[in-house]
Length: 167
Image 1: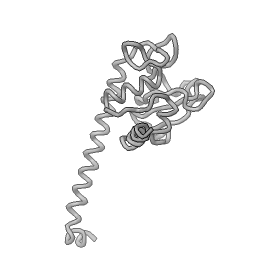
Image 2 (image 1 turned 60 degrees about the horizontal axis):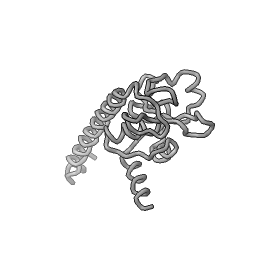
Image 3 (image 1 turned 90 degrees about the vertical axis):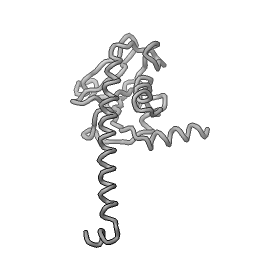
Image 4 (image 1 turned 45 degrees about the horizontal axis):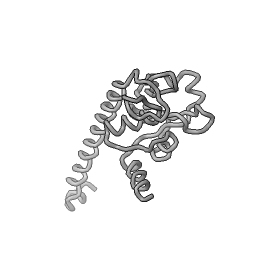
C-alpha cells in the first residue's frame, strides 16, 4: 500500500496533511489556554443582568460572549440557549479548558453558561449581587442542574453568524 501511495505522490501529501492537523491541534490548545487566562483576568467583575463588558458588569452569556470575542475573535450569540444551539455537543468526559458548560438554573434548559477551566471547575458570572468567579461543577448544586457541554468551533459560529446576517 505504501508503495502505491508513494508512486502516486500521495504519501508526501498524507504526511503534509498530518503535519497540518498537528499544527492546528497546537493552535487550538494555545487558544484554550489564552481563553482561560483571559477569563481569569475578569475575576471579581460584578454581575449585571444584560451586561456584556467589564465596565458595566456581565451576565453569564455576556461574559462568555465577551471572552470568546476578545480572545478568539469568534462572535457567539447573546443568550445562553442560543450559545448551546450553535456549538458542538460533547460528552462531559471530553471537557477541555475553554469548552462551555450549561446549567438549568431558572427551570428552563440552558439558562446558565460558563467556561470550563479544567479539574472539574468553571468560571462564570453567576447572579445578581455576585461577581465573576470559579466554581466546582462537582458541587451538588451544579451537578443537579448540569445541562450539557459544548465545544465552540469556528464552523458552528460561522453558521450562526451567516444565519443572523441573512435575517
